[in-house]
Length: 325
Image 1 (cartoon, helix red, strand yellow):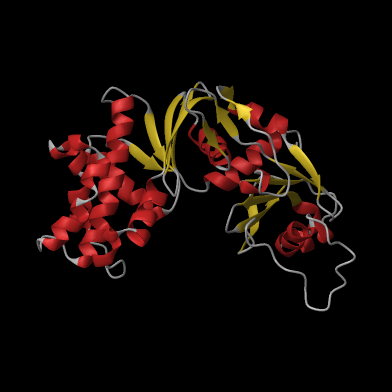
Image 2 (tube, helix red, strand yellow; image 1 turned 30 degrees about the vertical axis):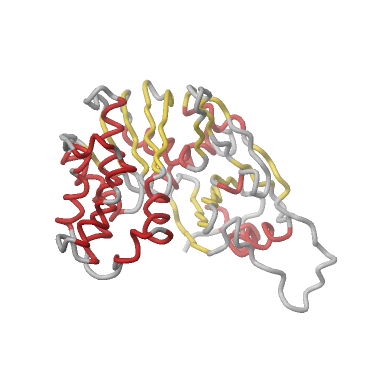
């Protein structure tokens, strides 16, 4: 069992729907972790009968969530540095942590933290998001911490980092500097199409995955028909069902593959057909495996999945900020 004096950092990955807390020892090893449902859009209410006049401010829900996540850790080790990344620093979060512009060195992210009174005897330091200014601006919030973690783990000069999910991100790194990133709303598009359009009427999304249907969809962007673009191609997830070529379960996997395939095809088009950098993926294991399949289908085979990037990145950003030695 860890003693209070061995606690070196308490770190939070605080998103829209969930809150994950990590307790590190002084050498940077995670010795305790927790997952709670208290994302910024679902904060814990005041207990029934509690005196809400004590704290009825806008901060109250965030403080209750923080108390549930790590209040006992802070009581055992008062004065422990406290850092958080994710949507907690957005406009809808506890306190907005302004974006910092890319390109920038990864080590500079931790130098612009936003501080808020946690109410637990230690200030909470919030990591900023990243802003890419252009005719079509792009932003990242939360993923910058995972990027910091994997860059430190892999120690390479040229790296392309894929973060598949609701809003998939592809981050280019050169000489430990984030130089560019792209966003694809692939996951959110899949959810919207399958739940709120006619495409979902004939789909079944439970049961064993249909890998053959997934790969069939993933390959569409490579074909002559794929030149019509995703907005045309997605209707085939319905028509192939109507003609009996895809079962209800297969239709869902086919649509998922089709969307991811168009994402990878667009990524390759932006890179003039070839990804020169080493490629690494961070995220849900099953989703990363599917991206591995599609990348291989498009000729990208030197890809690895990076573990524990979030917690490693939180530790590194705390060091860059001078919160820990």
